[in-house]
Length: 130
Image 1 (tube, rainbow, N blue to C red):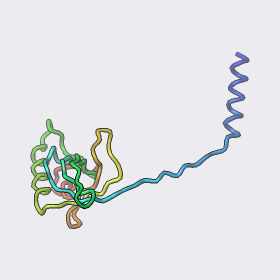
Image 2: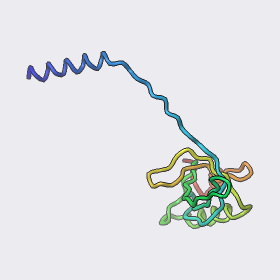
Image 3: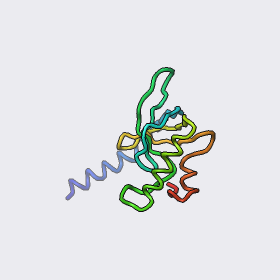
């Protein structure tokens, strides 16, 4: 109708005249040390994180950079066992993270002495790059 055309025309003119505002997003990332508590699957584990001197937090970590088989899929047990062994050897691991996923897990790269867990899982054929 004529009324709708009038309002559509006003909306189009209004949008054309708008000033674009840009927002700066500050993203805080951090690296913490963690100790293995238990392994859920090849790319997810529970770790005790050293947040500050004398302050720890138990968190579920989802390893970034790799996707391993789910519990019902072939290869799940091999990936889980490898990750469990890798996390237990040598004590502390580094977790580099910037965010959590929709399940509340910390998403991060897990490494020890410069060797990243996601890269090792992919090299061993236990996961695919993600």
